[in-house]
Length: 269
Image (cartoon, rainbow, N blue to C red; front, top):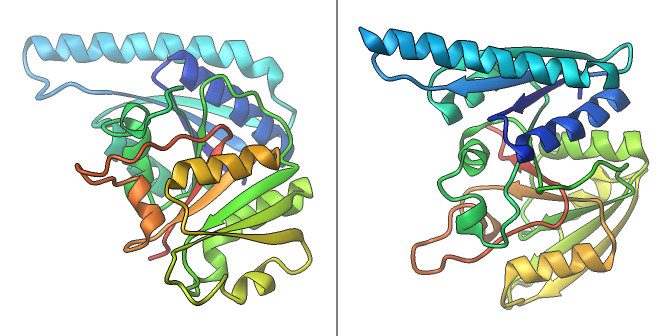
């Protein structure tokens, strides 16, 4: 967790994500990239003036944020701010890859419906396209050490340990307890993959199962709140039904929200 990327649109939610990221960076002595993206199509003629204005305006706001939070940084933590002209999601994804960031931290809006939080938003766009871990911070959520982390799994299939390396790094550093929450389908015969026990060896963890829940969101959130967890971690893999909460069908439109920071780990390629 040495390189953190925090995209900002200068909204209240984005600033809250930055404050969260600073606390995380201080814990790991990380470098924070604070990125603002503006978009101007075909900068010719008067559009060049618009681009220059947007760039200067973003630079002013970035400077304000750096000045505001510079004193909150520990001596081995740094904050670099930059603004780039481009499409928001692709620019964030490309920047994360080019700078080999370890984690993208973004804010979400405080609605309870997936189509209001994520669909059409930059957050879910990055979740769907980035090959980096994403930590989505609910509106107004304040940083606190991760004492309990829920890892929600929906399949018994094997997946490589490297895929949950960010989760393991957080759990080891914070000495967190991991609660593996297995969402099983009614006809599923296998339980959680035995590899989980191998991957979590040496950590404080427990395994829990819920079979045939009718609403995935409600089931996960109820478990998170009942156990007073500080973070929810989900692994998105193609052809897995948890993936559907980030790519809901037009007919299903299942709502999804998380009351705690949501760590999304992408399938390794």
